[in-house]
Image 1 (cartoon, rainbow, N blue to C red):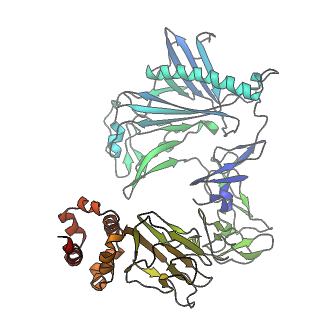
Image 2 (tube, rainbow, N blue to C red):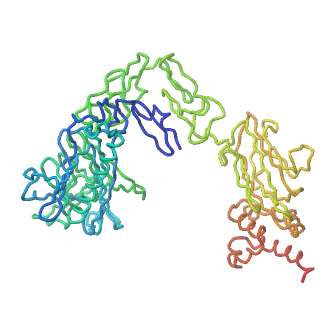
Image 3 (tube, rainbow, N blue to C red):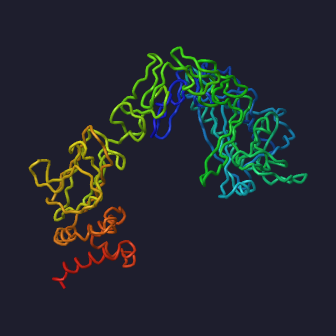
Length: 595
């Protein structure tokens, strides 16, 4: 987890809350979060009835069947509200396409209908987001354009509680429950209309419905060049494989033939298109096309064009914002329309590992647990997760280290590893492990390689002995780097292991596996690990460094019956012949008295 809030408050205008793998901007009381999820705008009473409905869902029963209309009003501003009731519902259509086509208004007309209490349902919302996805797995842009099988439409609604619902006998919580109950009834009606093809979406007076059949062009389609697609009967520019529909349509509504659509009702009924699949280096990612947003270095009252450049003394690194960030400390910028803090004319330029303090106009070293890799920044970045730095003034994320002592200790197999492995271990750390095998079992340890600097006179060391007492039997101890593997049995039935580092040099450290085996095999195991031929060739050394092969060997040593899981062919493929001959000769000699 990276703490995005440590990077210029996450870009949030007011409050920033870090979450696992993400973050969220919040606002103070009497403010709402803007649609861009970063800015905050002042709001009135959340239960005020003075705000006109932004989205109207109207379901009527006519001729024995329900019909629903979703209407988006013009000149609408939409903001997320903590007091809003948020509901998401998904509908499935067995035959359709993720695109819309214009449809004729029903003969009776929505405006002409006089809703009756018993057969009409009407609900107004402050936010709606529609997303369509295909249930069929298809490959390639062209096949997505023509896929027809079952599709899924997900509608996300935000519904605000009305002040009229609050009475002396029904408080805000009670009113909220009533509103939720009423909306569930509306959703039931909406489900029926979708399944019966009686659902229409209305924008700026034009009705749309889910496309059922591919359109038959009235005129031959022209041949499109590279980087162009056929959104309809004419060519359009393509952005990374996605049709730039916003340049063609005033409200950005997806025409017939587009693969997927999604709309967020916002200022001037502007909509956004989500889930357009972009292929890059074989990786599929999602794009969000906001062609009307203000660019970095610009702002506007709603974050959309037309925009103004950031005035002198301010900057804005993000798109779609409603204000610019002051440089602070009376600093100005070299030009208007600045997009970075580096455009502010600071009195000194700070080097990596420092940040510029606009109050004292000095460079301050990044505190422990933070770092800054760039020149001229006004913040330091917090280390991710549970990592921290050894000292202040850090310049790289690699200097953020996990101080937790690593490893997994089991009765039969396990391993120990230095903190932050395979990265450099932290300074001034101390780790202790205890291996206590079950009765009648002994310990075999393999040290594939170990990296400890010797420049600081054994300030960092690893020791294995019977107990914490310095006078107890010692099995292994080192303060140096050894890239040549070694295997050995414990001189005691249990092991106390300690790793300690000082404030000096650091290194990669170690990852040391172990296995406990039946003490009846003690003579055989010691015969194997003490034989120089085990380490004589590079092939044999690589076996002791290979995690997969060591796991297979330890699996058999811990549980000899598992030997029969491996066929002769598998063994030959896993291990070189010289290694197999070495083990076979020792096992045969060990078992010969019992033949």
